[in-house]
Image (tube, rainbow, N blue to C red):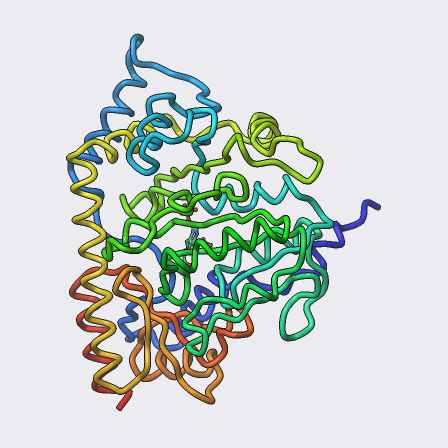
Length: 401
Ligand code: PL4
């Protein structure tokens, strides 16, 4: 009988978000009268705005015409790659350096194939679970020790270090996942910190996978929106990004990765050529309809809608943050990111999750699900209808006192 991939046996049961969904279902079944409100998973809730929506509709309509029909679009529309380069990178990247994807998460998983099982992986702790779980699945990380996986370097990001890790702890020749604006802490790296990260990656012979999925939530113009604002990053970084959170495409599925031609492995081979080969082999391109929507999103009217939508969720974040502050709960994030990271000293995250669910019927995300340093924290997501967020805040303020 064929045997199971041993890497799968290594992974902890239950990916974080389905686990939360399971607990939500169990609570709802036991309390059918409860009106649950989710400030848990970071899933967009608001309708796609009209200009971008028209792009999607028109993309679908074109498929029904002889002139407009298109089939496989493996490498992504040239026009979309050009526009991404212009809008986000001042035209600094060629179309052969921008790869259209079906979302950042999908590329985060596939990118692991570039480096393989023996890779030394470093993550910010806490971090989006896909970096760690994906590393376990590819065999780059070992077994769960109760406090993390063997083979992964966890760099704590806490209030004590202003949520920026100690870069002197980076192992040599590794893969570094870095996310800014950060999920879950909401912290945004500043220019000096990002320069230090790029320098450290070059010094240690490492490659950074920079996850900029929330870059359109940055409002402070001094903060870098892409790692490629930093000198030298083209020789040590890949960036993943997405239309999910700026344009409400969580269900539409569209993203991109930038893999510079200047990026190479220790042996001098070009990473870009390998990524092209991997994508050509195991990915058949993003939906043509999604790409038509993406093009519309990057027109001036679409960019104004991206601003409007992200402003809306940032408005929610402000409400959540002030509700927590009125309870004297210490929290960060929410000003340049859609997540608020709240501290409950000495408490177990899942226990606080259960208490908030029980007292307020509000779903959150337990910080420990993002890594050992997330223990005693709760992540509040600002993705929700305004009326629901207002009601959730009211319940938190009244029932958590
Ligand atoms: C739940 C740092 C959310 N089922 O939509 P994508 O694939 O372009 O982007 C996913 C993504 C990429 N990078 C970061 C992210 O935070 C996310 C989405 N994270 C969350 O609540 O943390 C949604 C999670 C979804 C999932 O597993 O990704």
